[in-house]
Image (cartoon, rainbow, N blue to C red; front, top):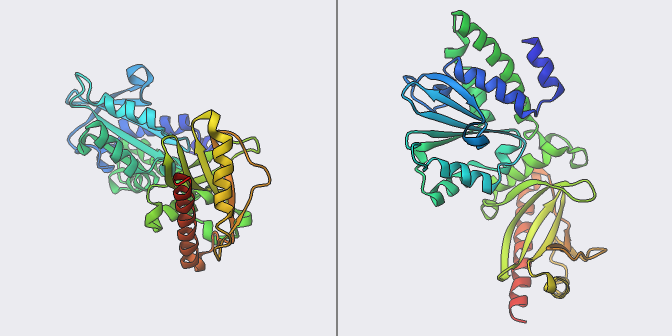
Length: 333
Protein backbone atom coordinates (compact mmCIF):
# COMPACT_ATOMS: atom_id res chain seq x y z
CA UNK A 1 0.00 0.00 0.00
CA UNK A 2 3.04 2.25 0.18
CA UNK A 3 2.79 2.52 -3.61
CA UNK A 4 -0.75 3.94 -3.28
CA UNK A 5 0.54 6.51 -0.81
CA UNK A 6 3.34 7.43 -3.20
CA UNK A 7 0.91 7.94 -6.10
CA UNK A 8 -1.55 10.07 -4.14
CA UNK A 9 1.35 11.96 -2.61
CA UNK A 10 2.29 13.07 -6.12
CA UNK A 11 -1.21 14.24 -7.06
CA UNK A 12 -3.87 14.05 -4.38
CA UNK A 13 -6.57 15.55 -6.60
CA UNK A 14 -6.08 13.19 -9.58
CA UNK A 15 -9.54 12.01 -10.60
CA UNK A 16 -8.04 9.08 -12.52
CA UNK A 17 -6.27 7.76 -9.41
CA UNK A 18 -9.47 8.06 -7.40
CA UNK A 19 -11.44 6.35 -10.17
CA UNK A 20 -9.10 3.35 -10.15
CA UNK A 21 -9.14 3.03 -6.36
CA UNK A 22 -12.92 3.34 -6.18
CA UNK A 23 -13.61 0.99 -9.09
CA UNK A 24 -11.53 -1.66 -7.36
CA UNK A 25 -13.36 -1.22 -4.07
CA UNK A 26 -16.80 -1.10 -5.70
CA UNK A 27 -16.14 -4.34 -7.56
CA UNK A 28 -14.35 -6.29 -4.84
CA UNK A 29 -16.09 -5.48 -1.60
CA UNK A 30 -19.29 -4.30 0.10
CA UNK A 31 -18.69 -0.59 -0.52
CA UNK A 32 -21.93 -0.06 -2.47
CA UNK A 33 -24.06 -1.35 0.37
CA UNK A 34 -21.96 0.46 2.98
CA UNK A 35 -22.58 3.72 1.14
CA UNK A 36 -26.31 2.96 1.26
CA UNK A 37 -26.51 2.97 -2.53
CA UNK A 38 -27.54 -0.66 -3.06
CA UNK A 39 -28.97 -3.37 -0.78
CA UNK A 40 -26.43 -5.99 0.34
CA UNK A 41 -28.01 -8.70 -1.81
CA UNK A 42 -27.15 -6.85 -5.05
CA UNK A 43 -23.72 -8.00 -6.19
CA UNK A 44 -21.43 -6.22 -8.67
CA UNK A 45 -20.55 -8.40 -11.66
CA UNK A 46 -18.28 -6.24 -13.78
CA UNK A 47 -17.51 -2.60 -14.51
CA UNK A 48 -17.24 -0.55 -17.70
CA UNK A 49 -15.18 2.61 -18.04
CA UNK A 50 -16.84 5.72 -19.56
CA UNK A 51 -20.18 4.12 -20.53
CA UNK A 52 -22.82 5.67 -22.82
CA UNK A 53 -20.23 7.35 -25.06
CA UNK A 54 -18.34 8.78 -22.10
CA UNK A 55 -21.38 10.30 -20.41
CA UNK A 56 -20.25 8.86 -17.05
CA UNK A 57 -16.94 7.84 -15.50
CA UNK A 58 -17.94 4.30 -14.69
CA UNK A 59 -20.78 1.79 -14.80
CA UNK A 60 -21.04 -1.13 -12.40
CA UNK A 61 -23.10 -4.06 -13.76
CA UNK A 62 -25.19 -5.70 -11.05
CA UNK A 63 -26.43 -9.28 -10.79
CA UNK A 64 -30.04 -8.32 -11.57
CA UNK A 65 -29.03 -6.86 -14.97
CA UNK A 66 -29.26 -3.23 -13.92
CA UNK A 67 -26.37 -0.81 -13.82
CA UNK A 68 -25.11 1.74 -11.37
CA UNK A 69 -23.79 4.73 -13.31
CA UNK A 70 -21.05 6.55 -11.41
CA UNK A 71 -19.78 10.11 -11.78
CA UNK A 72 -16.77 11.03 -9.67
CA UNK A 73 -15.61 14.60 -9.18
CA UNK A 74 -12.46 15.55 -7.28
CA UNK A 75 -12.17 19.34 -6.90
CA UNK A 76 -13.50 19.87 -10.44
CA UNK A 77 -16.99 21.30 -10.92
CA UNK A 78 -20.07 19.30 -11.86
CA UNK A 79 -21.68 21.90 -14.10
CA UNK A 80 -25.39 22.36 -14.70
CA UNK A 81 -25.41 21.07 -18.29
CA UNK A 82 -23.52 17.88 -17.46
CA UNK A 83 -25.69 17.21 -14.44
CA UNK A 84 -28.89 17.71 -16.43
CA UNK A 85 -27.73 15.36 -19.22
CA UNK A 86 -26.72 12.67 -16.75
CA UNK A 87 -29.93 12.76 -14.76
CA UNK A 88 -31.98 12.75 -17.96
CA UNK A 89 -30.19 9.52 -18.99
CA UNK A 90 -32.07 7.76 -16.19
CA UNK A 91 -35.28 8.36 -18.14
CA UNK A 92 -33.96 6.86 -21.38
CA UNK A 93 -35.53 3.72 -22.81
CA UNK A 94 -34.03 0.58 -21.32
CA UNK A 95 -32.64 2.32 -18.25
CA UNK A 96 -35.64 2.28 -15.96
CA UNK A 97 -33.82 0.01 -13.49
CA UNK A 98 -30.49 1.85 -13.59
CA UNK A 99 -29.37 4.22 -10.88
CA UNK A 100 -26.86 7.04 -10.60
CA UNK A 101 -24.21 7.69 -7.96
CA UNK A 102 -22.44 11.03 -7.61
CA UNK A 103 -19.24 10.88 -5.58
CA UNK A 104 -18.18 14.45 -4.82
CA UNK A 105 -14.75 14.67 -3.22
CA UNK A 106 -12.67 17.66 -2.21
CA UNK A 107 -13.93 21.01 -3.43
CA UNK A 108 -16.51 19.31 -5.68
CA UNK A 109 -18.80 18.74 -2.68
CA UNK A 110 -18.89 22.53 -2.18
CA UNK A 111 -19.12 23.74 -5.76
CA UNK A 112 -22.01 21.33 -6.36
CA UNK A 113 -23.77 20.77 -3.04
CA UNK A 114 -26.28 17.88 -2.76
CA UNK A 115 -29.40 20.11 -2.48
CA UNK A 116 -28.67 21.57 -5.92
CA UNK A 117 -28.68 18.04 -7.38
CA UNK A 118 -32.02 17.39 -5.70
CA UNK A 119 -33.43 20.51 -7.33
CA UNK A 120 -32.22 19.43 -10.77
CA UNK A 121 -33.62 15.90 -10.37
CA UNK A 122 -36.99 17.33 -9.38
CA UNK A 123 -36.92 19.63 -12.41
CA UNK A 124 -36.07 16.73 -14.76
CA UNK A 125 -38.64 14.45 -13.12
CA UNK A 126 -36.39 11.74 -11.65
CA UNK A 127 -37.36 10.20 -8.32
CA UNK A 128 -34.94 10.60 -5.42
CA UNK A 129 -34.56 6.83 -4.96
CA UNK A 130 -32.92 6.57 -8.40
CA UNK A 131 -29.83 8.61 -7.56
CA UNK A 132 -27.47 9.06 -4.62
CA UNK A 133 -25.00 11.77 -3.68
CA UNK A 134 -22.08 10.91 -1.42
CA UNK A 135 -19.18 13.03 -0.20
CA UNK A 136 -15.77 12.41 1.35
CA UNK A 137 -17.32 12.13 4.81
CA UNK A 138 -19.67 9.36 3.65
CA UNK A 139 -16.87 7.55 1.83
CA UNK A 140 -14.43 7.73 4.76
CA UNK A 141 -17.08 6.36 7.11
CA UNK A 142 -17.82 3.43 4.79
CA UNK A 143 -14.14 2.63 4.32
CA UNK A 144 -13.65 2.04 8.03
CA UNK A 145 -16.59 -0.34 8.37
CA UNK A 146 -15.87 -3.69 10.10
CA UNK A 147 -17.30 -5.41 7.01
CA UNK A 148 -14.21 -4.24 5.13
CA UNK A 149 -11.64 -4.17 7.91
CA UNK A 150 -12.42 -7.64 9.23
CA UNK A 151 -12.36 -9.48 5.89
CA UNK A 152 -10.26 -12.64 6.00
CA UNK A 153 -10.27 -14.17 2.50
CA UNK A 154 -7.58 -13.19 0.00
CA UNK A 155 -9.72 -10.77 -1.99
CA UNK A 156 -11.15 -9.27 1.19
CA UNK A 157 -7.67 -8.68 2.61
CA UNK A 158 -6.62 -6.83 -0.53
CA UNK A 159 -9.77 -4.69 -0.38
CA UNK A 160 -9.12 -4.03 3.31
CA UNK A 161 -5.55 -2.88 2.67
CA UNK A 162 -6.64 -0.64 -0.17
CA UNK A 163 -9.52 0.80 1.90
CA UNK A 164 -7.22 1.65 4.82
CA UNK A 165 -4.67 3.37 2.60
CA UNK A 166 -7.23 5.12 0.43
CA UNK A 167 -9.26 6.44 3.37
CA UNK A 168 -6.22 8.43 4.52
CA UNK A 169 -6.15 10.33 1.24
CA UNK A 170 -9.92 10.88 1.20
CA UNK A 171 -9.67 12.48 4.65
CA UNK A 172 -6.72 14.59 3.52
CA UNK A 173 -8.78 15.94 0.62
CA UNK A 174 -11.64 16.80 2.94
CA UNK A 175 -9.37 18.29 5.59
CA UNK A 176 -8.25 21.13 3.33
CA UNK A 177 -11.63 22.83 3.88
CA UNK A 178 -12.01 22.22 7.63
CA UNK A 179 -9.40 24.35 9.39
CA UNK A 180 -9.96 27.92 8.18
CA UNK A 181 -10.57 29.28 11.69
CA UNK A 182 -7.25 27.92 12.98
CA UNK A 183 -5.02 30.47 11.24
CA UNK A 184 -5.21 34.11 10.07
CA UNK A 185 -6.95 35.03 6.82
CA UNK A 186 -3.64 36.33 5.46
CA UNK A 187 -2.38 32.72 5.54
CA UNK A 188 -5.46 31.14 3.96
CA UNK A 189 -5.08 28.84 1.00
CA UNK A 190 -7.66 27.85 -1.59
CA UNK A 191 -9.24 25.18 0.60
CA UNK A 192 -9.74 27.62 3.47
CA UNK A 193 -11.81 29.92 1.26
CA UNK A 194 -13.88 27.01 -0.04
CA UNK A 195 -14.49 25.85 3.51
CA UNK A 196 -15.35 29.28 4.89
CA UNK A 197 -17.78 30.09 2.09
CA UNK A 198 -19.46 26.71 2.59
CA UNK A 199 -19.69 27.59 6.29
CA UNK A 200 -21.40 30.90 5.44
CA UNK A 201 -23.82 29.12 3.10
CA UNK A 202 -24.76 26.68 5.85
CA UNK A 203 -24.92 29.35 8.58
CA UNK A 204 -26.77 32.30 7.05
CA UNK A 205 -30.21 31.52 5.56
CA UNK A 206 -29.95 34.32 2.99
CA UNK A 207 -26.86 32.59 1.56
CA UNK A 208 -28.41 29.11 1.34
CA UNK A 209 -28.36 29.18 -2.48
CA UNK A 210 -24.96 30.87 -2.82
CA UNK A 211 -22.71 29.68 -5.62
CA UNK A 212 -19.10 28.83 -4.75
CA UNK A 213 -16.32 28.08 -7.21
CA UNK A 214 -12.92 29.10 -8.47
CA UNK A 215 -13.18 32.03 -10.87
CA UNK A 216 -10.45 32.59 -13.44
CA UNK A 217 -9.29 36.08 -14.32
CA UNK A 218 -6.15 37.72 -15.78
CA UNK A 219 -4.76 38.11 -12.27
CA UNK A 220 -4.64 34.37 -11.65
CA UNK A 221 -8.13 33.76 -10.34
CA UNK A 222 -9.77 33.54 -6.94
CA UNK A 223 -12.28 31.49 -4.97
CA UNK A 224 -15.60 33.28 -5.33
CA UNK A 225 -18.93 33.15 -3.54
CA UNK A 226 -21.94 34.93 -5.05
CA UNK A 227 -25.51 35.38 -3.90
CA UNK A 228 -28.35 37.88 -3.36
CA UNK A 229 -29.15 38.54 -7.01
CA UNK A 230 -31.64 41.39 -7.56
CA UNK A 231 -33.17 41.64 -11.03
CA UNK A 232 -33.40 45.10 -12.59
CA UNK A 233 -34.91 43.93 -15.87
CA UNK A 234 -34.45 40.90 -18.14
CA UNK A 235 -30.73 40.40 -18.70
CA UNK A 236 -29.71 42.89 -15.99
CA UNK A 237 -29.11 42.11 -12.32
CA UNK A 238 -27.14 43.33 -9.30
CA UNK A 239 -25.58 40.85 -6.87
CA UNK A 240 -22.89 40.36 -4.22
CA UNK A 241 -19.69 38.38 -4.68
CA UNK A 242 -16.81 37.58 -2.38
CA UNK A 243 -13.59 37.52 -4.36
CA UNK A 244 -11.35 35.92 -1.79
CA UNK A 245 -11.73 38.12 1.30
CA UNK A 246 -13.10 41.16 -0.59
CA UNK A 247 -16.83 41.74 -1.01
CA UNK A 248 -17.83 43.23 -4.36
CA UNK A 249 -21.04 44.62 -5.72
CA UNK A 250 -21.42 43.18 -9.21
CA UNK A 251 -23.58 44.07 -12.16
CA UNK A 252 -24.49 41.64 -14.93
CA UNK A 253 -25.65 43.16 -18.21
CA UNK A 254 -26.37 40.81 -21.10
CA UNK A 255 -27.15 43.42 -23.83
CA UNK A 256 -23.71 44.46 -25.05
CA UNK A 257 -24.76 47.90 -26.27
CA UNK A 258 -26.12 48.94 -22.86
CA UNK A 259 -23.29 47.86 -20.61
CA UNK A 260 -21.50 51.18 -20.28
CA UNK A 261 -24.61 53.23 -19.55
CA UNK A 262 -26.08 50.78 -17.05
CA UNK A 263 -22.70 50.33 -15.34
CA UNK A 264 -22.33 54.09 -14.80
CA UNK A 265 -25.91 54.37 -13.59
CA UNK A 266 -25.56 51.49 -11.12
CA UNK A 267 -22.24 52.80 -9.79
CA UNK A 268 -23.72 56.27 -9.24
CA UNK A 269 -26.68 54.86 -7.33
CA UNK A 270 -24.41 52.68 -5.18
CA UNK A 271 -22.01 55.49 -4.26
CA UNK A 272 -24.93 57.81 -3.44
CA UNK A 273 -25.94 55.49 -0.58
CA UNK A 274 -22.92 56.71 1.40
CA UNK A 275 -21.35 54.87 4.33
CA UNK A 276 -23.50 52.28 6.03
CA UNK A 277 -21.50 51.39 9.17
CA UNK A 278 -19.75 49.09 9.59
CA UNK A 279 -19.42 48.87 5.79
CA UNK A 280 -17.98 51.53 3.53
CA UNK A 281 -18.71 51.67 -0.18
CA UNK A 282 -15.65 52.27 -2.35
CA UNK A 283 -15.59 52.98 -6.07
CA UNK A 284 -13.31 50.66 -8.08
CA UNK A 285 -10.12 52.21 -9.41
CA UNK A 286 -11.26 51.19 -12.89
CA UNK A 287 -14.70 50.22 -14.11
CA UNK A 288 -14.98 47.27 -16.46
CA UNK A 289 -17.08 46.89 -19.60
CA UNK A 290 -17.87 43.16 -19.87
CA UNK A 291 -20.99 41.17 -19.13
CA UNK A 292 -20.04 40.96 -15.43
CA UNK A 293 -18.73 44.20 -13.93
CA UNK A 294 -17.64 45.34 -10.47
CA UNK A 295 -19.36 48.60 -9.54
CA UNK A 296 -18.13 48.88 -5.95
CA UNK A 297 -16.17 47.32 -3.09
CA UNK A 298 -17.72 46.93 0.37
CA UNK A 299 -15.07 47.31 3.04
CA UNK A 300 -15.13 47.00 6.83
CA UNK A 301 -16.54 43.47 7.12
CA UNK A 302 -15.13 41.25 9.92
CA UNK A 303 -14.15 38.53 7.46
CA UNK A 304 -13.03 35.10 8.67
CA UNK A 305 -13.24 35.87 12.41
CA UNK A 306 -15.10 33.21 14.41
CA UNK A 307 -15.84 35.47 17.38
CA UNK A 308 -17.49 38.16 15.22
CA UNK A 309 -20.08 36.11 13.35
CA UNK A 310 -22.98 38.31 14.53
CA UNK A 311 -21.22 41.43 13.22
CA UNK A 312 -20.57 39.74 9.90
CA UNK A 313 -24.24 38.74 9.63
CA UNK A 314 -25.27 42.36 10.24
CA UNK A 315 -22.80 43.66 7.66
CA UNK A 316 -24.01 41.16 5.05
CA UNK A 317 -27.62 42.20 5.69
CA UNK A 318 -26.64 45.83 5.09
CA UNK A 319 -24.87 44.81 1.89
CA UNK A 320 -27.99 43.01 0.68
CA UNK A 321 -30.15 46.05 1.51
CA UNK A 322 -27.72 48.20 -0.48
CA UNK A 323 -27.96 46.18 -3.68
CA UNK A 324 -31.74 45.95 -3.30
CA UNK A 325 -31.85 49.74 -3.17
CA UNK A 326 -29.58 50.05 -6.21
CA UNK A 327 -31.87 47.71 -8.16
CA UNK A 328 -34.96 49.65 -7.04
CA UNK A 329 -33.46 52.98 -8.15
CA UNK A 330 -32.44 51.54 -11.52
CA UNK A 331 -35.97 50.23 -12.06
CA UNK A 332 -37.38 53.68 -11.26
CA UNK A 333 -35.18 55.58 -13.69
